[in-house]
Length: 501
Image 1 (tube, rainbow, N blue to C red):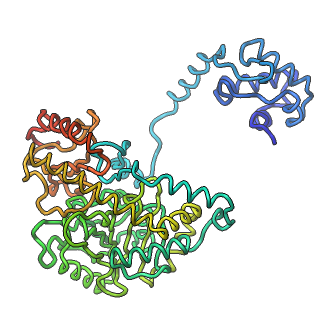
Image 2 (image 1 turned 90 degrees about the vertical axis):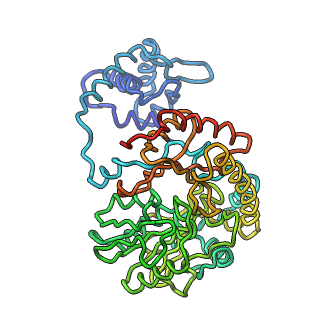
Image 3 (image 1 turned 135 degrees about the horizontal axis):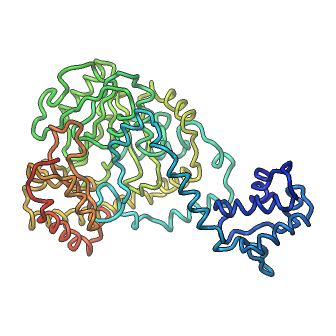
């Protein structure tokens, strides 16, 4: 097998340049070491091997190696071969030369307008674990041993189909398992051929936009609403209208945009509104369904954490209210298992299923066959349902602890009164005038993670201050100390009432 060093020499060596060939080989290797292409402690191939691979005599290579060793660029060790020295003589000169190139690189790159809009308001948090990060499950409770056993068995003799590019919207056995689970747990009307497995909810949203929305079309998004919707919409040249979520105001067309074209897509979280936690009434659900049918639009129902409901009767899906409804139902395993799994799914109306599957395969090149097979067995064996039951008990206990801390130290009125007993976070209301963005940053500087509520609004005049506090990934013994740090931040100047920037 040809070594990486041999490839480098074949690309860089100037065979027709003047001077001895061994000197030119020495210069080629020396410059690669100075540039950092050949890193310290990296192994050079044996002189005989390099000579054969690049078509030089062994003496030529040996002379080049000897010169590099004499000048301290490489070290020869008996039994180990020739390695690049940890400290090279011209390292300071090289770093200065590289810095000069960077300094003269010019201004920032000219990015597309859609990229500039995205970078102006980045939303993904660099830290995703710890008190009180919202929307993150306790990944330490994942059934690692069971998952490892399933993977190990599948890897012993995997079929070629599991290791190749896939086509069809996900492994059939997984789509069958998802369909069975959704019919029982969420009252979803679906068959396996209506299910499309995606690499996360964001990919499902992106595919829906690409398939159903043209430039200058209109979409409705809940206000406040999931930041992932907003992020993807900012990259498209479409008209976004806020669908106001007003607690206690659930009358006909309450909060609906009063002007503009009918929407092609309506993004909603009816079973547990994100981020406020309210439940959309049956009347409003039917009203939206009738509206979508009459206008030829589609509803995207994000049912992101419906499995975790701790009191009251389960809320069935909007998709299941009527046969072949104009609803694209989206769910994920990120909250029930772990976010890094990157497996979500769409339940598509029959008219959309085949076009979506074909386009998904062309755009994203499906795969992850082994993961899909292991997930199928996890569901079919009952381990998945058992894990959800265990996590419901754990999360209910942690939710009760956080609610008690808020009630005792801040007051019951500070929690959203209309929030359902579901999900993986609580929404803490703050007095008008408090800068929740600065407050979240101050808490983050002390190791406490949260998300400012105001960032979930598209229209600044609609925004209300608050903090999203996740409890799922906070151990019981850590809850009190972490909450005390949050109280300290709330009592600091960052938590006092003042004009928001």
